[in-house]
Figure 1 (tube, rainbow, N blue to C red):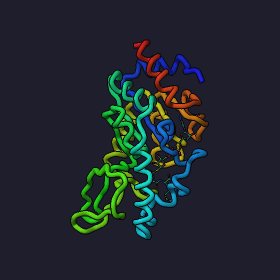
Figure 2: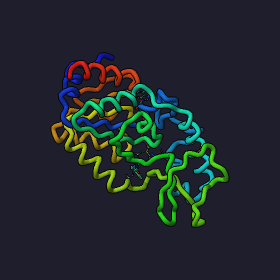
Figure 3: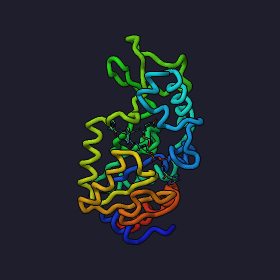
Length: 245
Ligand code: BV8
């Protein structure tokens, strides 16, 4: 789908550009999405296992599921969509990336100013001490992993029914309020509170562009909704913007 010239112009003249991403941006890296046709993680829906209740009931099963996902994500590489966002960050006067993804692919693509709203699959947190460590081991030995203190370690990820961390949600809403242009990429826009961020930008007078493989509940409220693959559209948009600057 062609990129409207108004979108190129708005991104090129943006003083504060924000990008909000969801699982769709990692689809072309081979990472399954949550709700698309491949929206299953090994026959489990995130809503079944990404919950405190599931972890309480069977920490080993939840860790087996995350260990399997870490294996998939560990084999994945950033795609041209992730890389285009990293280039947009470098050329924008002010920039923030807000991601719902836990796969760490944006950081590997060179993005710096990132809010990981839902945490990171490579981080683990002691359920007792709250200490957080990064562990890239794939596969993990003897699941579920334990802290040196003897307590269980859990994925440092926000599960359904859990509140997001105050500092990251505060930053996300502030950025959504302050930016003059937001690109919303690869999200079905159903999970709250992330899905409210584009509305915040719109209400504050910002220009909102959706780039997604299918229409979503926020498509009608955006200034422009571009249907297609983010791995194709973002590099083209970034190229057109770089020529416009
Ligand atoms: C909260 C970490 C306050 C897990 C995730 C009832 C009870 C309890 C809570 C609720 C409730 N009703 C509503 C809620 C709130 C709930 C929620 O929103 N539920 C939804 C399902 C209705 N939210 C929460 O619980 C949040 N906390 O609200 O705290 C509170 C506290 C207690 C009680 C109530 C409220 C916490 C939400 C965070 C959950 N954790 N992830 C893990 O990953 O293991 S969310 C999970 O969904 C992922 O992070 C994912 O990023 C996120 C959103 O999904 P998407 O990223 O959008 O991915 P999806 O597959 O859906 O869509 C992909 C899109 O890409 C598709 O549109 C597709 O077409 C497109 N696409 C595909 N390929 C491409 C593409 N686009 C472009 N190019 C391509 N190539």
